[in-house]
Amino acid sequence: MTNQQLEQQMASGVYLKRDLVLVRGKDALVWDHEGREYIDCVGGQGVATLGHSNEAVARAVAEQAATLMTCTEIFYNDKRAQLLKTLAEIVPSHFKRFYLCNSGAEAIESALKFAILSTGRHNVIATVRGFHGRTMGALSATFEPKYREPFQPLLPGFSHVPFNNADALDKAVNEQTAAVIIEPIQGEGGVNPANDEFLHAARRITQERGAMLILDEVQTGFCRTGKWFGSEHSGVQADLMAMGKAIGGGVPMGGVAIADSVKNIAPATHGSTFGGSPLACAAAIASIHEMQRLNLAQEAHDKGVYFRERLEEINAPVIREVRGKGLLIGVELKTKVAPYLKALQAEGVLALPAGLNVLRFLPPAVISYSQIDRVVEAVGKVLRH
Image (cartoon, rainbow, N blue to C red; front, side):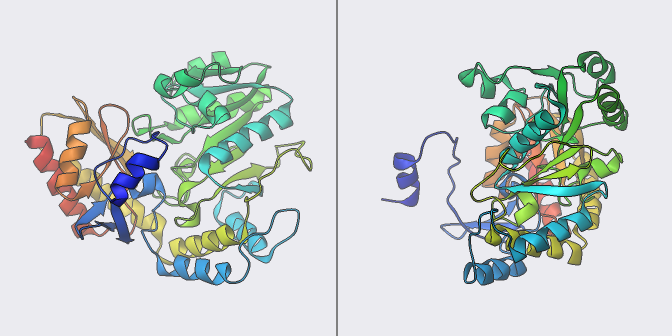
């Protein structure tokens, strides 16, 4: 029985799988079980910003695995302390504390709980087309009905306002609002950047009314948008910042950066068995140091500008708009995207949807300019034909 057949027979069935068995990766390339090469613009859905099989991360993981793999946070640990110090050096300077967990969805759950603890309130305002994860709290903040409806009723007190509509947000936030949660760029929702006016209005409104501002940087963090964090483009300072995906260089990890404005986080109010494990911390330290060594934020900015300009040169009537920041890029089409994803795969390029009609590209920031050219050539070919 093949690997594909084994997964078809024994996996849960919750994933729409593509007809492709990936077995190896290096930098921006992956290979299937027959040795065919692909340029990876899926990047683990944003995890592989540093690329696949980075040698420094692999070495750090191997060394830590042979030293101490697990250490619950009821004990102190050297690698955890080093990671906290490293995070403090790269996040916006008003963040002073961190909670470590295992994924972006867990980071969102944690940020929501911290906002409730801090304010004593329970209502949360999110945005139309926002995506924050699939666990029950994160799903309550997520907008897309197809994700929500099978699990309703979800948590009470969650509502959604139109993205980039400061007036609607102003009317929605009141004395019962614990938090407003926003993605600096909506990824799953269509690669829609938040404008500066909306983000600054969210900061002003939440401060005036005693609510927390949560920025979901799970996909936009760690150099993806051309800065360390997507919110740095606007300069907005959140109370809580959720992190995940690229933080561990491929090892599962998440976290929340916490400002001094967040109160009432007491022992035993939250926790995680694997959160802040030495193994994940070692991977994250190595990953951040590699991002610094390679100047990956600037690389993502420069390559993102080049990538978008090349995509905008494609003369295909099916294209409505190219948008994004850094290497989080969307090509909105006038038709459904699914057939084009399949056609791109046949051309040796892996990409993502963002809703029904947006092609999304999340390549590693170590992608070469010649590889970007190959991607653009393939996109042009499939969109024109």
